[in-house]
Image 1 (cartoon, helix red, strand yellow):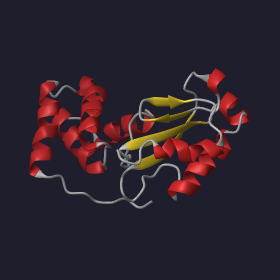
Image 2 (cartoon, rainbow, N blue to C red):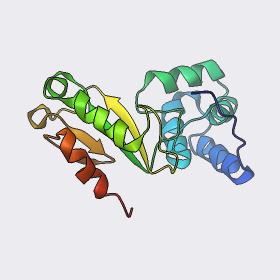
Image 3 (tube, helix red, strand yellow):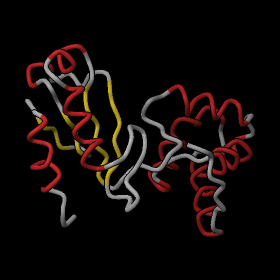
Image 4 (tube, rainbow, N blue to C red):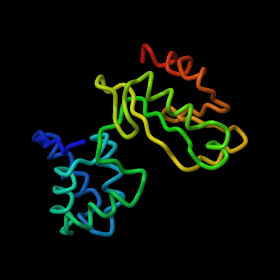
Length: 162
C-alpha cells in the first residue's frame, strides 16, 4: 500500500497542538500524546507524527519508532468496526487461519486494510488471553469465541446497520 499524503485541516491541527499542550509539550509524554492523537484521527499518519515531533521537540524518527514499536498504534486508517483475529498458538491450531481467510474473502480486503466504505478493517493479533475460547475474534471491544468459518457471516450481520 503506497503512502497517501493527507492535509491536516486547520481545526485538526489546532486540536493536535492542544493535545500536546495539555501534556506540557513534554517529550516524556510522547506515548500519551500518541494515544490521544490516535483517538482523534483514528490512526497516526506521517503528517500527525510530524506535528507531534515538532510540538514535543523530538525527532520524527523517535515518534515513528514509538508508533511502529507498539502494536496498538497504526499508521493506516482502521474501520469503524475493527476486526482482529487471534493467531496465537491455541487459536491457530483450532482454525484461526481459516476464519481469517473467510473474513478476507467476504470483505474483499487484505489484512491491515479497511473496506472502501470504512466500515471494517482486519488485523491479526498474537494472543488475547482467551485460549479456552479458541479461535477468538474481536470486533471492536466485543469478543467472539469458538468462531468457525461458517460463523463469520453471522458476526458481520450484527454490524449491518451500525
